[in-house]
Image 1 (cartoon, rainbow, N blue to C red):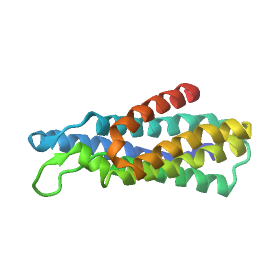
Image 2: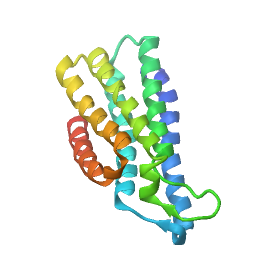
Image 3: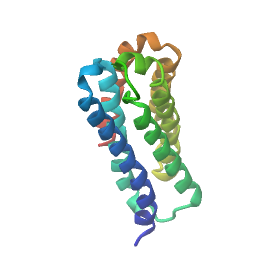
Image 4: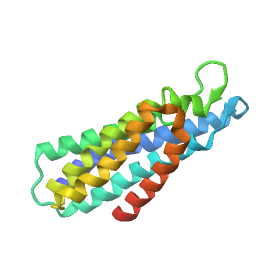
Length: 180
């Protein structure tokens, strides 16, 4: 077993749990669909979070040629996986007791923790790009800073969550296009 395989077992477990959490939330919402007030922006946010989980897994394959792994690299990647799991955990409302499950209300309230987790996840990108992939510093900082700015706005100004979600979908499409 290579170091890459060894390291990515732990990361894959966390990412697999993130996917499981999102899928479980969707299944629970389908079960109580009569009590759900659907809003496209929260659904789009959940899809973006899923895309970042898959993107993290995909980019991880690119690290297979890294010859020397350090414990710090492992810790940063685990923190990134935990952050993206946190984003998945809080992305969608879940049935808790009785009452209406309002997607938009969730995104403007507790769902902001999902945005905070994504903001923290974007801090991992520059480290991985610069120290592990050897990419230039400025491009490795600019794109994650844009993601951090969007998620910070989602946290700070939740009333414009739908508009910011549209921007985030565009941003995510760009990131996925560059890293695929």
